[in-house]
Image (cartoon, rainbow, N blue to C red; front, side, top):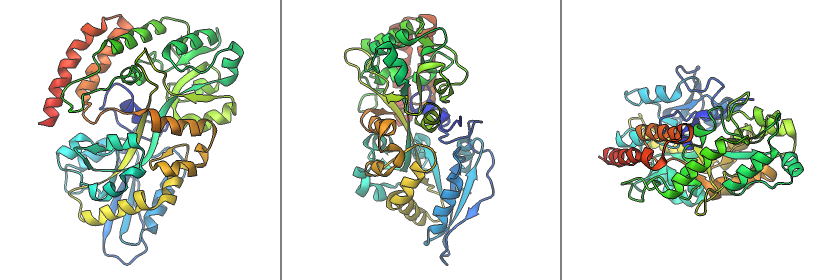
Length: 429
């Protein structure tokens, strides 16, 4: 099975915010250390030339599609560069020079560093009139100080897969609460099939900040001055998962990682935490014998939650023609809805960023695909733009100590709360 978005969700729902968000990446997991030969599009006689960067998508046909889009634009000659390898590193280096791509995609929209360093143009003028057309959860992440620095392209997400026939045979329903997840996992687990799988680290990596959201809490207060998840509900969520990890219901090791649907498709586990991108392969393997649900609510104040990720189209502030670049981004990612549906629906399974376009995506019209699109809209979360790398690392280390080493949650997270306040003050400065 193709690994499409492993890194995108390391940051969207995992522990650290520094992980590369390589949506649609190949099995090597990264984006561009070098770029393939650029392709020039545009049929007009315009003297305006624009460069556009993409990372390497794993699905066949994406490269040809974006080259076709560029060729159909008549107001400028757009040169598309396809970037395999460590794309985020290459992009970061390019943005520090004067030789920047005019238009480029970036994980979860522009990063805080890009915004603070003046590397991306303000796109509020093209986004503000249409903001209501986009997925509200995505818009929340793409907004910083009331401004937009990227236009959402396509949405991906994580969710919980379950095998219908296995749960029916055991006489249990798909879990809506974490207590139910534990009960179901232990009832369906056998010597040959695990109950629930979320990675070969026991799930502590990918689930990460899920323990915050599923327990009903937020990462920061509205003013982004302090961490607001250091509450008994969060500590209880960690302890509940720790207890679960000691039961037969949690499959600790499988043939592939969580981001590959193979363990679920080949019957190693009855339930698996995975990505929307795995759905086509799972459907080929098991037909209609599967369903999807969000990560279930933990505790009395909890809520169902799914992490999402979205690449955004940005304009370099130091580009040679910022206005022309903004016009192209508006044309492609705001005006050309047929292309947006194709981009989301023709190459794997993804969710259009505009809510009205979801119904036009054939793979989301019914069944598990429709359920997934609903979850992303109603239960979607992603790391706050100020969830920095150092904070994510400290948080991840604390989660691991609590679950793997039986550390006391309140004591272990005291320093995380202190670091959060320091980091928030630093990045605001």
